[in-house]
Length: 87
Picture 1 (tube, helix red, strand yellow):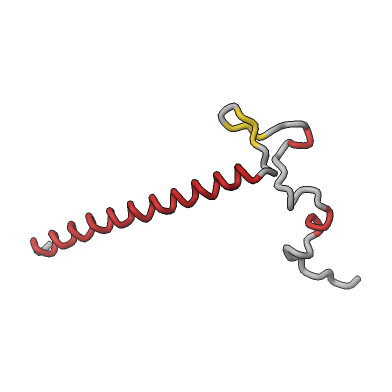
Picture 2: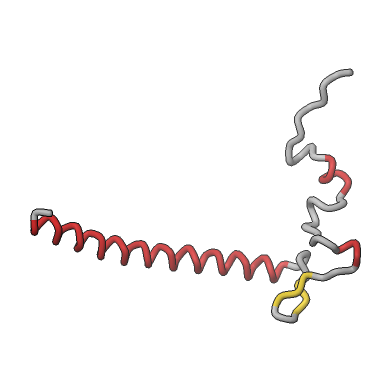
């Protein structure tokens, strides 16, 4: 028996079958369950939830950057004060 070729994103069997991998199916979809957030059904195949997720990720990244700069200023002030005191 010849060894099979390694699976990649391009050669993965689910990509060819279009069963679950490329369509981002939710767990329990086969049983008729829906993804619900705050009482609203979320269609994972539409573009809107993905755009919202990317926007929230970007806002979170910007917020982290602002807070990191604020933390660095406080940290630098504390370490400078400690150096002045000789601690």
